[in-house]
Length: 133
Image (cartoon, rainbow, N blue to C red):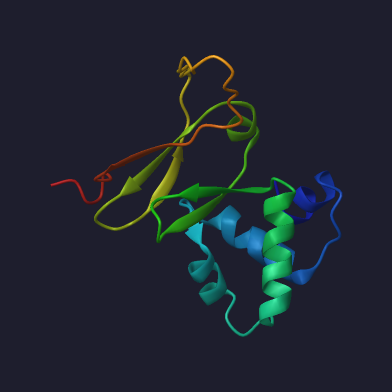
């Protein structure tokens, strides 16, 4: 799918900033932080345009947030599989890459009575296949 098609599918106006961001996500094999995204688009857009476009993509569900820790947050393109099913994120503690991992395993946790689950985030930390020692 192209950036243009993603924006059309979500009924969002095509702007060069949104398309530029989506092209970076589509080309990347890993999740990106806001800083990584901003650096790759450096000088192309002012701060306000960048953040408005970024928030629009996040609010529309085109990208999703991966909280690695209280300092690092990454974002990845939402696919039909990640939208409809629980999925796991893997964070390499050596090179700091973050990837969505598809799994067919359903994880259920028995919550106390009266509690309601809205979402669940699972993050596995370790070494990726390039950093494995």
